[in-house]
Structure formats: C-alpha cells, structure tokens
Length: 219
Image 1 (cartoon, helix red, strand yellow):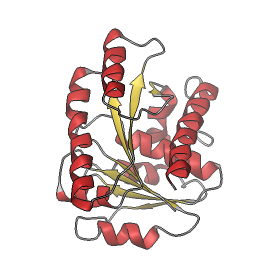
Image 2: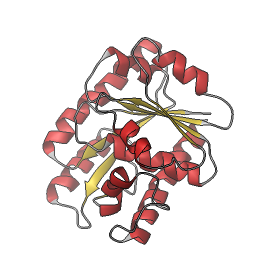
Image 3: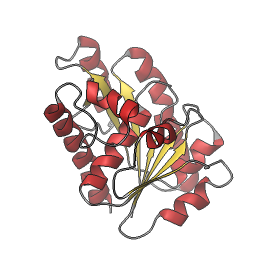
Image 4: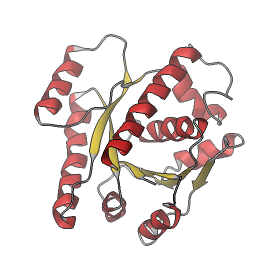
C-alpha cells in the first residue's frame, strides 16, 4: 500500500496536524496506518503519548536518515498506509523519504511567506523526480484557513494552479478540535468536545477522502 510523505521546509505550516488528521481518519475508515515521526520536535510521538492510540494506528519514533528507507519498505505492506511526518528543513533524510513516496503532501498556510518557503519543497520533489527518473505525485494542502478566503489566499492559490500544482480541496480550516487533538491525544471521535466537532469531523473526513482518491487514481 502507499507511502504518503508530509513535507515542508517551514515550521508551523501544519505538517503534524495534517499527518494526524489524515492518519486517524484513514484508520477510522478501517485502514491500518503506520506513522513515522521524523521531526526532531516529535509532535507525533507527543500526540501518541497523550492517550491510547486509536485502533489500527501505530507510531514509530526512532526513524533516522540511515534507516528511513528501510523502515518505510518494512511497513509498506498490503492493506496498510505509511505516513511520514518530516522535519521542517531540506535535508538528506527528507530527500530519502521523498524518494520512497507514492504521494507527497505539502501543507501551507495561505501567506506569502509560507508560499515562498513551501515552493522549496516543490523544488525538492522536482529534483528527486529528476534523479530517480520517475514522477512523484504531489499536492499542496492549505492549512489553518478561514471561512472567508483573503485576497492573499486567492492570489497564492491562483498562482499555484497556473503552475500546474495540485491543490487538495477542502483545505484544513483553523479549528479548535484540530489543535486540541494534540492536547488530548486520540482522534476527533474520542477526544473531548472542542468547538464545532461536527464541522471539524466533516472537514477532516473530506480532506482524507481527497488524499485517498489521489492514491487510488495513481495506483
């Protein structure tokens, strides 16, 4: 089954949030998920320690540059999805993980700074494609967005689309439940009520559905 790599050179772009929401939504739908925590901040590991992990979720923390490829291949088995949460820099570990990806997601806040730095992730993917002589499917997901898009957001999205960049819709909204999952652990179905839970669940489910759709289409 596929390997999904979450990559962005910018800290605070929402990589770990996207990883947790994606992983827990897929697991909730019955898909076994192994999550690799390759971020020095260990956000996934800290999340996993807050509460009992949801069913069908496993988190591995001791993943390094030297063993990331072996670890991905060791868990890339039938019926399972591997999600890799990477460090927020352009490094050899990041390149090695991207080389194994069936899909790379680049979380990005709808700001000029995030778009400028996020473009480095897209360039890194392009470099790996050239080195490996294969296409690496990738997409941008906007994170922490507002109900009403700003002019800046619309401009950034238009620019990316004109460059042929795939954009996941819906974006991940700025929601109390999404940040709360790191405080309480578990998933949106087990944590205490935070904000509008029904809207948060619908947003996360639609996001995960669109990611999964791309995996099936590229299979």
